[in-house]
Length: 365
Ligand SMILES: *Cc1c(COP(=O)(O)O)cnc(C)c1O
Image: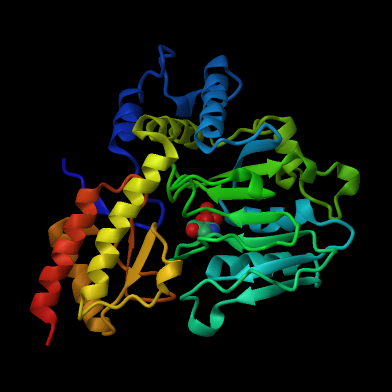
């Protein structure tokens, strides 16, 4: 058996220690004689799994007591609808910042609920290669929230400064930067993330919601389906129906792994060091191009291309011989993308850059 360097954007690489632990526990979790996958979610054993997962996440992210945490199904995309359905007041107004495909999709979804939803800043003019200036946005007094996608998985950009929301709650899709570095949770109204980028198996989303934003049924503006109501999930402690218990179990292990690595400060240090290796090389390369504005670079998803589609395809094909896989860029942008999440070892990034150098030498005319 041999592991590859998997640069997939998601589902993505997970820590080997976690995979081994899960493998060891597959036939008999904690003396139960069964795996977590086969176990009722109403057992004491599973209850401990989900309680510990939440406690460890709260610890890792330093989540204040006035924020609720829920584990819900449907990935990040389901939250595109849940956000307006849970947060809109009678005004039904919200301001979206468009920095790529995922924020655009979230905006379009919110538009289905209200035509008073608007894009207040966009980087579409330069194909989403930068983060727009968000220091003085046209946010209205009656806007219910301001929405961002914090790390743009497809385009390789990241908000390194949060927008000035003029006092309105900030809603952030953190799917591809979740737990990659410390965040000040108090700056947000809602943080959510699909976990398959940096934390666990696909299909689960974690939503962190400031208490005062949780609405009673009477205050909801839409006929919000029971499963999409955050309050349903909060009241039921994420066990309203059968949860994605397997994903919660793996996430719990990843939270413990992060703690053992030294927490989010340590993650950040490691992630910045990995990204630096790649960006430093890209800056000197005469073959590979990265268009992202320097101050807006993501340390999770690094995009690059040669400018020649055939050569890009050759790179992707030859990379396999070096154990480097899923390095192809998203179909919207082409080229290549190296997703270098928490669990990607520095050796993987080094192997990638070594191969890029070699490829450049052979292919630069
Ligand atoms: C992957 C991703 C999504 C979509 O996640 P799903 O779980 O597939 O719905 C949304 N937002 C961001 C930033 C992503 O990276």
